[in-house]
Image (cartoon, rainbow, N blue to C red):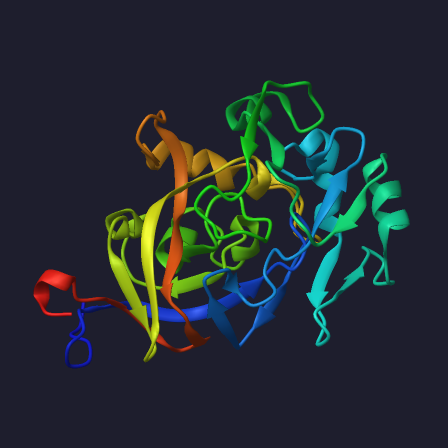
Length: 282
C-alpha cells in the first residue's frame, strides 16, 4: 500500500469501474462519474418490481421465479425516471416484464413499509438447479440503508479486481452487482480486512464498511449475454466463508457493504484510501 495525501491513510486501490442499477434485479449501466449521497449512487436501486400476488419485491435471489429479469436492462433518465429495454433491445414496460416472469409485476418507486424478498438457499440452487423447489429465506430490505431505495442491506457495494480474478469473473463484475469495482493486487477477498474501517474517496466522500457481502445464487445466473457460471458461487463457498454479521452463520462472501458518512462526487480513477480514525486526529 502506498501513502495517501497528507492527513489520510494508505491507498488501498483505485476506482476502476462504477455501476448503477436503477431497477432492482435488472441489468444496469456503466458510469464514469456520479454523485454519491447517503442513499448511495444517484439513481441506484430507485425502482423495483413488486409482485402484487404476494406483496414482495421481485428479486433474482429467487431464481425459479425471477431469473428472467436479468435479461432486461434499466438506465436512469435525466428527469429522474427509468428506461427499460428487453433482451431484443426494444423498450419494455410492466407488460413485457410480466410476460417474461410469467406473473404480473408492477414497477414502483416507493418502497412499501416492511418490504421483503425471498432468497433461495444458494447451496441448494447449486446442487439442484435454478428451476428446482428449494428452501427460501425471507429478508427485509435495507436494514442498514436510509429510508427509500431498494437495497438488500446497505446503499453501497464494493468489490475488488483481486476478488473478481479469484472467482474467474474479472471481465464480468456485473455478476456480483457492485457499485464500485476497486483495482487491487493480491489473491482476492482482501475486502474482508476493510470491515469496520472508514474509507475516503476524493476530497469529500467518506464511507464506513459494515460487513462482508453474502453471496446468493444471482452471480451464477445468466446476465444478458453472459451464460450461467456456477463457479461464481462455488469459489467463494470454497475459499471465503465468513460470518457477515453477529448471529449469522459462516456464509460464502465476496465484496463488502458500506454506508455513506459524507457525500461527494466519485469518478473512475479516484484513489480509495483508508481514512484516519478520530483518535488519530480527525
